[in-house]
Length: 385
Image (cartoon, rainbow, N blue to C red; front, top):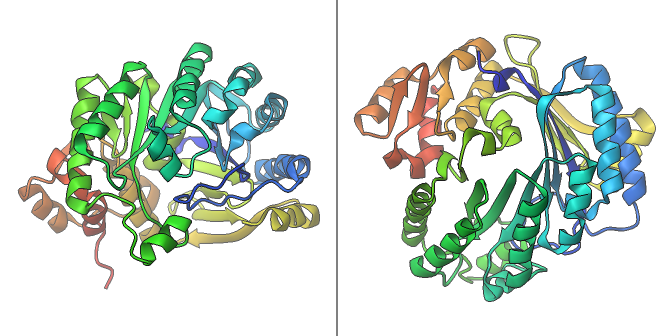
């Protein structure tokens, strides 16, 4: 049995940012003096969810955003303590927090509060690139943040963005090698994606080139894998590299393995249950902080939208997420949770093309298939027509 496929996680979305990056498509807002009220509302929402989920220990607790490192150590400690009192934290539970380099002086406070994994949003070490990306830190501060994180925390991840306009393979290689030289156990290098409703999206619609051409982006992707693997950080997921299994993100892996997670905070998403149990519930909290606060005050719950996924929709979601992992999609879990399987003829066709393989009850991407992950996942979903 896959332990994370049956685990429960908690995601806390802190939506506030001191500056909203022009490429960001997340549910984020500038602070407007509602921080204390929002914290109380999230605590109340957690209590509501405990009544729905029952007594299940948390395998992971993750603070995302937005910029959760804008919270104080005392606020983080209060949220962790409440989660522990409601569900209990499983032995070895991961408590992760996404941190902005500008909040480096508070990293020790987060560890003292109970956080045991820091994900530092460096994005680049190059001053010009950081300005282009609209970040509020420079290269020297990015380096200091990495050093500080590694000094206070045993499990550190570094987030990077590449395939930027004007970036060459050589400049990315130099930057990536410098990042890897810090010795962190995890790195998440993401290709810059231009989303339509962002500032970058609006600029791109006017004809501005903000990312790398497709062919160069593909070359940079392969280069990233080569360099990371040469430094001992294998890709365990499409865009995530870890030195050892213990360095992997347990919370994100819970998503990819199709476990359950509760989402609290404005705009947070969650998934609970499965088609072969009581039906898999897909929930989304109200996005606007005020709407979330009003909903909590009125009903105790911040949920704005909820639906029960059909077995076919759940299958499609599990295939899309599971195929991102280097381990691949667990076919036994897919069958146990949805009662459905993959499109066998499509798998045979993709296998003959050298894109996928089956091993030990899992199907996974071969190196040639990694760059086509989403398309391959879609082909593995049976045609319902």
